[in-house]
Image (cartoon, rainbow, N blue to C red; front, side, top):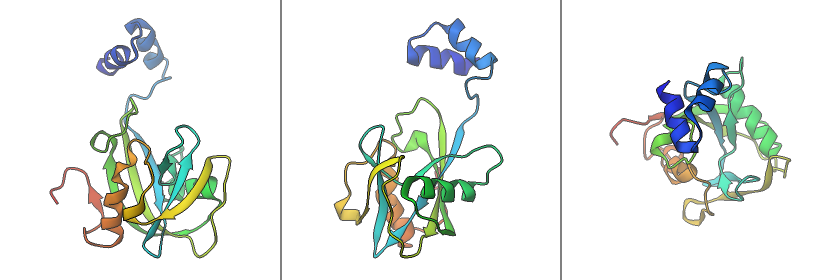
Length: 169
């Protein structure tokens, strides 16, 4: 129940209430995992403008039960941009604790390079805007997406993929 104690302190809630949610399995006891879709065109990365904070991020989200991580990345890409595609390669596994995420949950982000053809993205119910950005013209990034400049190094093979947090580079 150490996790419940930490959440109760962070959320300034009585431990008993938080512990009850953990016992009732309404809180996750393990890290969450999600997948993201890195679509590169002409050395520009596809980003979406998020509804929740109005900042920019790589399309992606949490995996659903029974779904593979590549399926998650492709589903999230379609939900957030209207694009379909195919997996090219695994770029890396990122630990949210090391990349500025403000979530109280511990998240792992698995990021795939995706070929989405030449179709144009669309504004969807999950994103208010989209754009392709070069590394030197990035917009304000959502917390945790500070890893976007690093993705360019993986996409351009200046750092070998796949990347895993904890390795020396």
